[in-house]
Figure 1 (cartoon, rainbow, N blue to C red):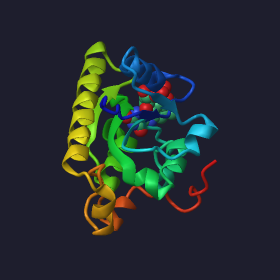
Figure 2: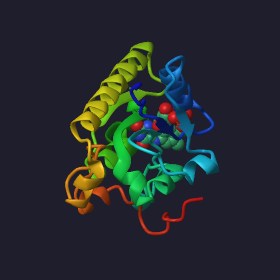
Figure 3: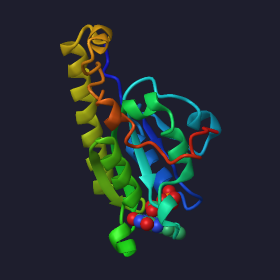
Figure 4: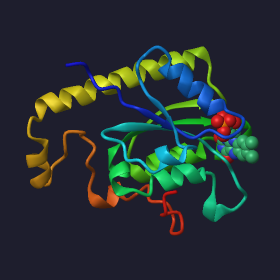
Length: 185
Ligand SMILES: Cc1cc2nc3c(=O)[nH]c(=O)nc-3n(C[C@H](O)[C@H](O)[C@H](O)COP(=O)(O)O)c2cc1C
């Protein structure tokens, strides 16, 4: 059985930096890059662990700072949040203390790791790093499936599921977007 490749879900604005990076990371690898700008993707629920790539967009409004709306909407679903395995950020250091604010905020709130931070579309070394990290993540998750042949039973018993990312309920709701963003569409 081949190892499942964790899909990349990304949001990218018209400038397309994240799209370029995600497509380069996934090129010729069989890994899926799914665009949260598409309504159907945004309304779907990943069938297993997934990785988010998000830019940061400082809006000037401290209550609604920096996380793109499409990302907020996708994260509104609790199963989607639970299956989030890690976060990759694309930002610009010119934004100083707001550098990577969206990705860091989501990682902190969800308890998931920041896998990588890149500037703009990333360098070719960033692409190589991302491919390696995602490959390692695939392998780790595959081992957990082998080590845990009865994930449903474990879930019933209240332990981690086969995805190995079943945090306590308060952690899983950590990346919950603010009220008003909970209507995927
Ligand atoms: C209006 C605006 C606000 C931005 N705010 C931030 C920010 O707060 N932090 C950061 O690290 N990068 C910030 N950036 C940089 C973008 O996150 C970065 O260029 C990213 O690669 C854009 O990806 P995209 O072209 O796929 O949308 C901002 C860019 C723009 C145009």
